[in-house]
Length: 431
Image (cartoon, rainbow, N blue to C red):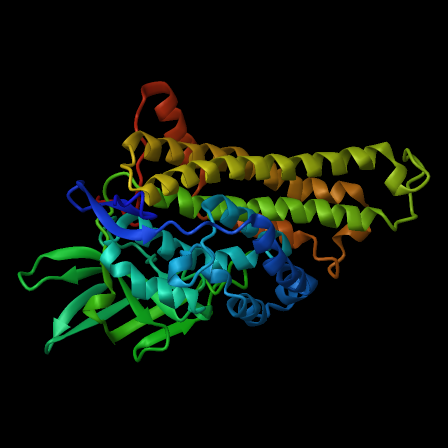
């Protein structure tokens, strides 16, 4: 009996040398319907939305909201059924992520590293290493990140190191922008592993968030995304289990860059929907009008209707764009599940699609965050309404991977056919 006849499929992963080899077989369990997933999580999203503005205004970290999602096993969405997860498709995942972002745009960024680590398993990591991590995610455990280093360190040369000391691997370094790690059970740390011969290998090391030597500091001082825990992670002589180290070659085409970027774009889409929602909620009960207005009450003023129509159209356009890129990632994921080779052209295509989506959506959504205030007068800027949070959060997300550089990549490809890069680093260039 063939693998296909028996209901088993083989995935392929790309090794560090670029060759493809078959993954371990996985069962072809059917994905759940979106309606079933939505019925499970929408009541939690509604509960999260009730205090979203209040939490952000008071800078009250979202442990309650993360706890509700953890209890419902939101983090198991992309874990296969055979490992105890829901087996949601890429498209279903991003549709739900948009709804979560509409409820509270801090939450998707908190979960971004978690879902990114699961996708990294599928895209880049030996399938023999998958099972224990997928089971942990299925049980409700969450992954955070400690990737970026600040300061004037050299480009492409992180200071974080794993070195053997008295027969034990020890991790040392300081990371920033550690979104989600305050809420996590495990932290994925990018580091250089020093081999016994003195050479170094880039890796991802997963360490317990409460392990000795791990210090998580809530010192993120950005004006937006204030509840994401995107602060400092200090790692001092943290013991690392060799079984918790993943190779991270950071070379060659990958769907991971597009995936991580699309999480931000899904969050911007949720913000656009929240803007439409809040504009309607503001306008409907209002009685006060301007003497030079065009309606007896604001909701009947065609100018106000036009503004809300523009906001609704932005939300629709953003959702359609994210859905289109998610479908490309979904196609790649289905090839993997069927055990078919993934053409490099598809990886280039989805990376360019994500870049174009970013270039197109950022300005559109940021314009909507300002246009929102055209539906009212001075009362729209009252602090207790907190409508400014939409601009602050959208602006902060848009600054994570500056859109000007993505626009240049898209333009270079359009003019010269130059392939996009899939990895980049931040630091000081050689003098």
